[in-house]
Every structure is written in C-alpha cells, then in structure tokens.
Amino acid sequence: MVLYETKRLILRNYQSKDVADYFEYMNLESTALHEDFEPYTLEECEKAVKARLSNDAFWVVELRDEGKVIGDVCCRKGDYETYEIAYDFNENYGKRGYATEACKVLIEHIFKVLKGRRLYVGCNEANESSWKLLERLGFRREAHCIEDVAFKQDGDGNPIYVNSYFYALLSHEWPDAYDSITRT
Image (tube, rainbow, N blue to C red):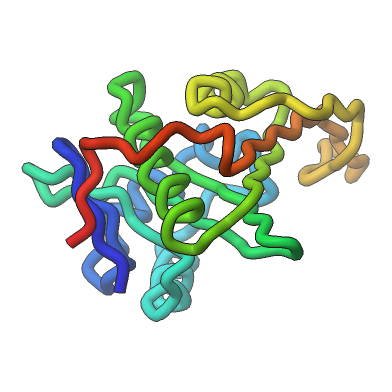
C-alpha cells in the first residue's frame, strides 16, 4: 500500500471508485494525442483500474481537499536499478503545478524507497508540456530521435512516425528530500 500526501495532493494506490475520474481524462483526445492508445472507453477504463488495484507501481493523483482524481503516475523497473516513469493528467486541471508536485513525489519514492539509480522517460517531441515538465524536474535530455516510432496510422493505413525525446535523471542529481512530502 502506497500513500503520500503533499499540501495539495494525495498519491495512493488505485481503488475501484476511481473509474469515473479516470475515465474523465482517459477518454479525452488530448490525453491520447501523443500516446500509443486511442481515447479509452468506459469499459477499457474499468479494466485498467481493475488491473491496477493490486499494483504498487501505479498511483492515482487525487486533489487532497476535493477527493477528485486528476491524474496518475507510474514506474516500471528495468535493469541496473533503472526505472521508467510515466504520467497522465486531466487537462482540465493543467497549468497549476499538480503534475510537477506529483512527479516529485514519485521521483523521491523511486530514489529513496526503491533505491533507484537512474530514471528515464521518452516523450513525443510535439508534447511540449510533457518535456517541459521533465526539464522543470531536472531531467536531462539525452536523445532526440527522428521518426523513431509510429503509434498510429493515417486514413490509408500508413504509419504516422513521430520524433521522440529521451530524458534521464540520476539519483545523485536529485536534491534532498522535499519538505512538502509526507509518507503516511
């Protein structure tokens, strides 16, 4: 069981009650735009939440005062104490620092609790809000790959290739623990 609190957020494991809030942002075109999926149906959201109920690698990001889930974060362990992180947030709650606040908690957890050594993230070059978030968090851009992946197809079934940025952050590059994070 994972539970963290900041001044404005709660980061915790998924619960069955999260389906409606999860669907609210996972069915948006804007959420799927730079991803390898199309907007989720309600049934897909129900299945995804159910699969995440017992997995400590996936957390919801909930507004502390409202009890509303506005996004999620996750991490996947790789070799050599390396972790990949990912996140999705409801655009209706954007430009308020929630993603930055939540990702700081996730990063702190990986480095301090899981003893991770290196984090990495790949994102679509066109997803400016994502790569700017990573840069605010102190990640270093390590690669710019041209036409490296195609998640979607055009109307004729041809792949639509995208350019990607790859970012990384080492544990010794991360500042000391943030005072605003409390593990409960």
